[in-house]
Length: 219
Image (cartoon, rainbow, N blue to C red; front, side):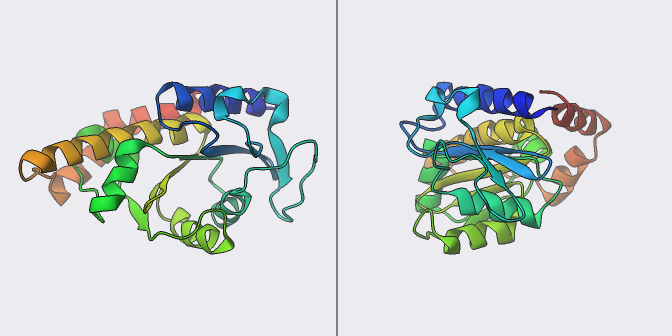
């Protein structure tokens, strides 16, 4: 994938995030890695309004902004620190999905409930509330990003990562659906969780491995 293709993919998934109601207004930020450069949403823009040429290039090793036409998102440190701790990671999607935020306000776990969650999301990390845009938040998220692909930020939002933007984005969708199902079920009774054995069995299915592998390869 070229630099231009990276910019176009970012624009595509930024608009999908807004269309699906995963973020509103100028909130949220997403990025993708091309070689040693990350392309990050510019500060002050609603994700749906960003054009391919407006994504801000930032050098990952040094943190230098390579084009100062636009300021990078105020969460630039969070994205930088995550890429530095996990070189396999190629994309980060940070959104403010309603059910995910609601979940962090009332609980500190998201149990394994259904096959798509087990196959595409896996175990979820929680990060305690920290003032957004700070290096403290960036460090806390980066500490989790080496082991988890889905991270809930208490009273704030969701961070998902992937080997490409498609994988990171669809993890966001499945996370929001998982939080929604859990909160609805919990409001009327005790959710039946997948057992550890059932969870591992789903992850071991050849069909699910194929689906995840395809998701990582496709745009």
